[in-house]
Amino acid sequence: MNFDEIINRQNTHSMKWDMMSSIYGIGPEDGLSMWVADMDFRPPQSVQTALQNMLDHGIYGYYGDERAYRAAIGWWMANRHGWEIEPDWIFTTHGLVNGTALCVDTYTQEGDGVVLMTPVYHAFARVIRAANRQVVECPLALIEGKYHLDIPAWDAAMTGREKMLILCSPHNPGGRVWTVEELQAIADFARRHDLILVSDEIHHDLIMPGHTHTPMAKIDGIMDRLVMMTATTKTFNIAGGHSGNVIIPDAELRKHFAARMGALGISANSFGLAMAEAAYSPEGAEWVDALCAYLAKNAETFDAGIAKIPGLKPMKLEATYLSWVDFSGTGMSHEESIARVEGDARIATNYGSSFGLGGAPFLRFNLAMPHAQIEEAVARMQKAFADLQ
Image 1 (cartoon, one colour):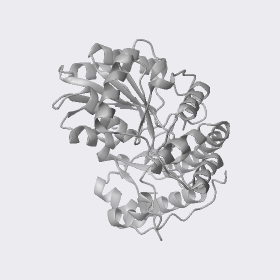
Image 2 (cartoon, one colour):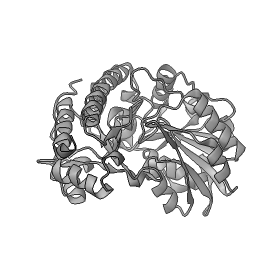
Image 3 (cartoon, rainbow, N blue to C red):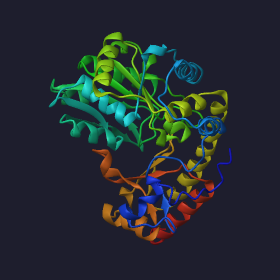
Image 4 (cartoon, rainbow, N blue to C red):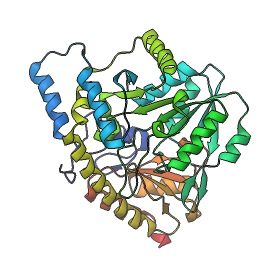
C-alpha cells in the first residue's frame, strides 16, 4: 500500500499518460496528467496475485462457473454498503459505459428522451446521442459552491417523451454524496414521470471521511424501475479489465436486459472477473480504507493550495478523487484559463464544457496520484496564476 511511489506509466499504452501529448500538446516528460479518471496506484496485492495465478497456469480459456465471483460481489455489497443482493440479479458488462449503452438500448427507443442531471459524466451524453436518443439536460442548482437538486424546474421541463433517467451517485464531477432525502426525491421524480432509473454508482466506495453513500436500491418505491450499476474498476484501479456489473432486482426488467445481452452476444472477460473476485475481499477492503484516507489528504492539500489563487474555487469533495474547480472568479475567458493551465502549468485536465450545462467555467482535476505530485500541481498552478495573487 505504498501510494507515495511514483510509477512511470509512459510507453505502457496508458491513455492517461501516452495520449496526453497528442490531445493536449503536453509531453509526459514535463507534464502532469490529471484528466483520465484512473489512478496512478497499483491495486491491492490480492488482485496482483490473482493475475499471477492465471499467468502461472498459462491457459486463457473461456470463464465458467461464476459462483465465487457472484458471491464476492454479494459479500462486498452487504458488508460495505448494507445492500443484500441475489446472485441472479447480476449481469457482467464490459465496464459501465457499456452498461449504460446496454440500458439505453434495452429500455428506450430511437427518439426517446434520456434525462441527465448536468453537469455530469460526459460519456452518458455521448452514448445517448450515438444511439439516436435525445439528451434532456436537467441542470443542477449551484448554491454556495455546492450542487443541489432542482426538482420543480425538472418537473416543468418534462414533456412525456422522456423514458429514462441516468443518475450519477456519487456525483461526477461535483463529488456530491446524495443524501437519503435527495435520493428519495429523485426516485419520486422518476416514478412521477414514469422513467426507468439507471443509477451509476461506480464511485460508491471512494467516499471522503464524514460522509456515507446510500445505494439507490435502499430507497423506497423505486425497485420496479431501478437498474443499479457498480464496478470494481474505479475502486481498485483496474479499468483495463473492462468489467462492470448491472444489477437488476426486478424480474421483468431483468428479463428484457438478459434478452438484449443474449442478442448482442456479450460475455465477460476472464481477466476482469478474476480481478473483481480478488478485489472484493477483506484484503481489498483494507486497501480501500487506506486509499480513501490518502485521497482525503490529497484533496485537502490541493483544495488549500488552489483556494489561495484569487478567483479559483475548488468544490468540496464528498466522494470520488476528482476535483471540480471553478475558474469563473478570475474574470478570464475559458480559453485563457486553459492556456495557463496547459501552457504554463503543463497540466492536462478535463474541460468542464464536456459535462453539459453548467460545466463551462470548470476544469476537472484527477487527484489520484502520489502526494508529491499533488504538491507539484499546486505549485505549478500558483506560479501560472501568480499575477492574480
